Length: 142
Image 1: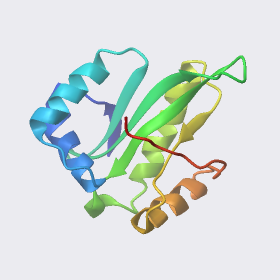
Image 2 (image 1 turned 30 degrees about the vertical axis):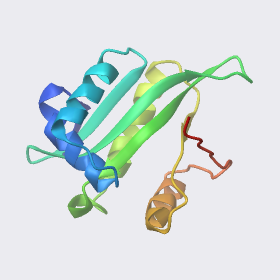
Image 3 (image 1 turned 90 degrees about the horizontal axis):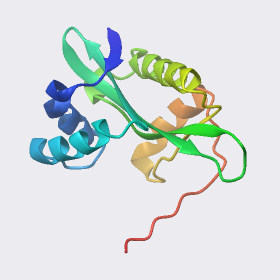
């Protein structure tokens, strides 16, 4: 298993992983999104590859605190193929996300996760990695 930066050839696997996360995504839609993300230097996408197959991903965005004179990373997507969970791959992805964040002078990592019952295992996983549940997110479509 290895962790590496995502590239264009990973788009079909990324679309599949979005489905695993509960967001139906076509390869065409993922290509459009990935092209925009990859062109923005504040984004960084890492994938976990196991025996040549992409089995997980973490997408990061470098952000600026309003309330502090420091910058932080926001995990905007973190997903593992359900057939490859509980093998330490997610932990390895998180460690690489932390390393990228530190290399880029970021002092913290934040993430949001839905308050749906099917996300409870993910919440336990995040806590095991050292994340604290400190806020509630809100969304309003406009």
